[in-house]
Each structure stands twice: as structure tokens, then as C-alpha cells.
Image (tube, rainbow, N blue to C red):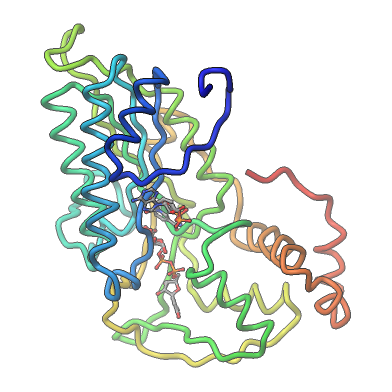
Length: 311
Ligand SMILES: NC(=O)c1ccc[n+]([C@@H]2O[C@H](COP(=O)([O-])OP(=O)(O)OC[C@H]3O[C@@H](n4cnc5c(N)ncnc54)[C@H](O)[C@@H]3O)[C@@H](O)[C@H]2O)c1
Ligand SMILES: O=C(O)[C@H]1O[C@H](OP(=O)(O)OP(=O)(O)OC[C@H]2O[C@@H](n3ccc(=O)[nH]c3=O)[C@H](O)[C@@H]2O)[C@H](O)[C@@H](O)[C@H]1O
């Protein structure tokens, strides 16, 4: 039944070995884009086991099934900017140290990169890790700051805006989802074929690691100001020192390697990306009319913009 369809959705747990094995028996995957994981820096303090189960055990399960598959697929998977942890380099390049994770989430993503290295070395699996940098956009995650700040500003609730311990702005290299999608497709298109253990070619396929960011970190305070303009609503800000919850003071991506190897070039600045996100948000939650009533010219301009292709 599955073979008849170009696109199909199978709901399964990464840790459901029999189901994944059956899937690989039926479909001769040549490429796998692996994005499934327990994401989120702060939630790891509440539910640590879910990170181990999905990001380590689940990833090993997928690698075990992939190395036994025929053909062995080329795997592109989501790592994370959080592996740079408390690095003081600026911007981060793939050669910089990643042995100081600041959160369990970051540690499980780093573990994924180390585990990938062994499956490439022993079984010749073609593996490409993509270090995404704070991804935002329509259909995003409600637990991320850009998303719940929008909700809280619209509901007149107070938002906590973090500052570093030495009272500096906390910043992120916010990356719009469409740019991330283009990066994933570029990595898939340039992935080497896996070569099987022992390798038919001169040696095992490559293990590749790339930053996918926007190359322009923005202070969180600026994110809030952009949202205030788009929502035509003043945020109730509570500025507090960043709690010790796994957060890092800043992220900033050097993407020259991804640019060189598969032409990755981010094209969406934060203001444009947040305009598309807010446009989706007010439409999805059916609050256009409420927000439009108090609308400013800015809002009218935003809503009058032609709907753009989104990911
Ligand atoms: N959003 C970001 O800013 C960001 C930044 C860096 C890296 N990433 C990575 O990108 C990927 C996608 O993240 P996202 O932000 O879209 O998060 P998300 O929570 O929206 O998507 C993750 C998906 O993985 C699924 N999943 C989790 N554990 C699973 C399991 N054991 N079996 C099957 N499915 C499972 C979840 O149900 C969810 O649908 C993740 O690997 C995440 O670590 C995200
Ligand atoms: O690139 C990554 O690899 C990570 O990206 C994302 O993490 P972060 O960059 O931390 O995004 P997010 O939580 O939205 O906080 C945004 C900013 O708001 C600050 N922040 C946060 C909460 C708050 O109440 N106040 C605040 O100022 C906060 O200090 C931060 O400066 C993904 O969630 C994570 O899965 C991981 O993959």
C-alpha cells in the first residue's frame, strides 16, 4: 500500500524499532531528513528523560536501522546552535569548541554529533548535521519566546525579558523557517551516498556539520520592539537577569561553510520574518478583526502585503 504513494505520513516513535524496520523494509529510502527530537532548552529541566529517549536513544535507533538497510540512506539531521554553549567566540564557526553545553538539551544534541561520527566511521553512513539557530516563523513552537511574547503582548500579560548576569542584552541569531528549509534541501541535494561498512569507494562517506543561521544576532529587546510595532500594542516588560535555565548570552552563526558547499544564503531579516509570523498568527487564531480594530498604518501595511510563499 505504501509503495503506491509518493507522499505518506506514518505516525511512529523513533524508539519503535519494529515499526521503523518495517518502514525501511517497504521503502528503499535513499535519503532521510531527521528532524524529530525533544526540542527546547528550558523544558529539559522539567522532563530530562524525554531528551535522552528522543535525542539519544531515538537517534541511535534510526542509525541502527539505517546502517542495516539496503540501500543505506544518506542522513541529514537537525543538530543545534546550543552545542556552542558558553563559547566566547563571535561568530561561531563549526571548528569552534562544543564541549561546554549549557543545557541537557544541548548535551543531547552534542551527543548526537558524536554518535553520528561513530556510525560514519564504522558503517560508512553518509551523515550531515545542521546546527539550526533559533528558528521562527508560521506554524512555529508555542514554547519559544517570539511565539509566547506575541500571545502575551496581545493579551496584555507581562513578559520576562532576559538580561545577562553582567546586565547586557541577550541576543539570538534568529533564523526564518524558509531559510532553514532551503538549507535542509541544499544539504540533502549535496549529500554523498552512504558507502556501507568497509565502503565500496575509497573510504566511508563524509560526516559533515554546518551552521544554518542568519549571521545577524538581534537583542531580545529588539525582537519585543518589532512585535510591539506589528501588534500595535505596548508590551508589559519585566526585565530580569537570565535564570540559570540552560540559556546562553548570545548566538551568532558563521555560515561560510554552508554557503561554500551548498549555496546557503539566509534572505529574511527579523522584521520581515516576524511580519510574516504575525500575519499568520492573527489569521490562524482568528483575531484579525480585534487586532485590525486597533490597527496602526503599520498593521494595515502589513496586512495589505501580498501573501508570500511560505515554507
Ligand atoms: N526551533 C528551533 O529554534 C531549533 C533550533 C535548533 C535545532 N532545532 C531542532 O530542529 C528539529 C525540529 O525542531 P522544532 O523546533 O520544529 O520542534 P518541534 O517540537 O516542533 O518538532 C519536533 C518533532 O519531533 C517529534 N518527536 C519528538 N520525539 C519523538 C520521538 N521519540 N519519536 C517520534 N517523533 C518525535 C515531536 O512530536 C515533534 O513533532 C529538532 O531536532 C530540534 O532540536 C530547532
Ligand atoms: O538555536 C537553538 O539551537 C535553540 O533555539 C531555540 O532556543 P532559544 O534560542 O533559547 O529560543 P527561545 O527559547 O525562543 O528564546 C529566545 C530568546 O529569548 C530569551 N527569553 C526566553 C524566554 C523568556 O521568557 N524571556 C527571554 O528573554 C532567551 O534567553 C533567548 O535569548 C530553541 O527553542 C531550542 O530548541 C534550541 O534549538
